[in-house]
Length: 405
Image (cartoon, helix red, strand yellow):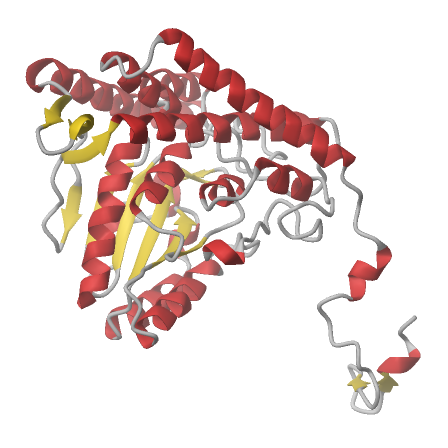
C-alpha cells in the first residue's frame, strides 16, 4: 500500500512540476500578457501555459482576452471561497455543522473561471460539493453558512444542509446528494433551452467518481441524439472518495469518454483556462452542434468529506506539493503581482475584507433561528381528505388523515 501511495504521489508531483515548468517557460520566453490596443490599459491578452487537449474537435486558442478588473475579481472570489471552506471546516469540527459536508478548497478555479464565461441565464446543476457553486451564482456567504448549520436564513431555509444549496433566480438547480443524479437533470435543463429556443447552455458538473455511472452515458446519448446545448464538466480531482482514478477507471481520459461527443481537457487549477474552455464550449453548444465534455484537471485538499481525513490513500507530500505548485488562489495572486495590477497593500486589503465577510456570515448564521416544526409540512400536499395509503401487503390500508397531527 505504501508503494502504491508513493507511486500515485510521484505521478501527481510530476504533473505538478510539468505544469509549473510550462508556466515558467511561457512566462520567460513569450511573456504572459500584452496590452490590447482596442481594449485600453485595462484589457490584457494572457497565454495559458498548459495546453488544452482536444477530442473530436479543434482546441480553442491558448490566448485569453481578459482584463485587470476580471483578474482581480477572480482572485477576490476565489479567496472568499477558500476562506468560506476553511470556516466550514472549523464549524464542522466544532459540531455547529452536522451530517455530510464536502469541501471545495483547491477546486475554486473551476467555479470562478466558469462564471466568467456564463451568464445567470445559463443553468448549472452540480453534485453535493456545492458551497462555492452557490457563491459563484450570486449567493451570499450567509446563505451558505446558515444552510450548513440548518438555519432559516440558509439557501434552502435550513432544510437542505450542505448538499442542497439552491438558487432558482440564478438558474442554479442545486447540489444533489445522489452520485451522478445531476447528469440527467442537466440534459433536461438543456432540452428546455432548445425547446424554448433560448441561446443558453446547461452545465452539469460531476466528479471522476461519478464518471463511471450508467445514467451519465444514457443522458449523454440522448443529448447528442437531440443536439442539446449541454456542457458536461467532469471535475477530475483524481480520487473518487478514497480511490485513485488509476484503480477505478480503465480509461481515465474523461474528456474522451463521450466517444462521438467532442471533449476537451483543461487545467482546472487555472481560472483563465477554465474561462476560455467554457466560453468555447458555450459557443459550440448554442451553435446547434450538440453537447461537449470538459474534463477539469483539479485537486481537492480536504478528504472526500469531513469524515475522511484524506491522508490514508495519498501522502501529505502529494497534497503539499500541489498546494505549492498549482494552488488556484495563489496562481491568481502571482498573476496580479507579476503584472503589477495591484500594490501589495491592496491585495492585503482584499484578503482582509473577504475574511471579514466570512466571519460576519458565520456570526449571522449562528444567530439565525432553526426552522420551526411547521416547516416539516410546508411544500407538501396538505389536503388529506380521501387519501388512502396502501401497505406492504395488499390488505392493509391507512387513511392519511388519521396519522397526521
